[in-house]
Figure (tube, rainbow, N blue to C red):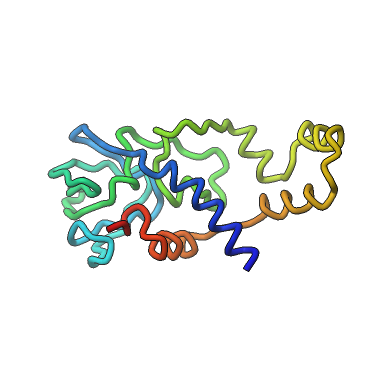
Length: 174
């Protein structure tokens, strides 16, 4: 139950950012690993291919939430707009593990900013500065442990897909 609440809160935050990724150019790039190329502009349609992050796409047609695209290998299909960006994605420095950003796609249009130092700190837990602040403000050890627990939660692609489907969010929205 607690994990479901944590996942719900994390996904709620990320879904507010999810509307980014609109593409107006004739070229687009896949911004999420394993993005599904669909037979039609519907999340429930057959997946014809899974595209790697960074795959260059030619936009053939644009729908409200979907793009009909063609790959360099002449694969054609539909991809959800939230899974593409208008420029090639930057490669991650670590190359290990999966990130929420990598699962959800390009969030470059969001107002949330994080540098690699912020990202590294979140992987290790609270920064020394945050721990000192918590100490100065009298934040209880229970709250600090609870936050460390939230930071340690790992969310996989299957969890995210299930959440998006159940919540009718993103490509699963009506």
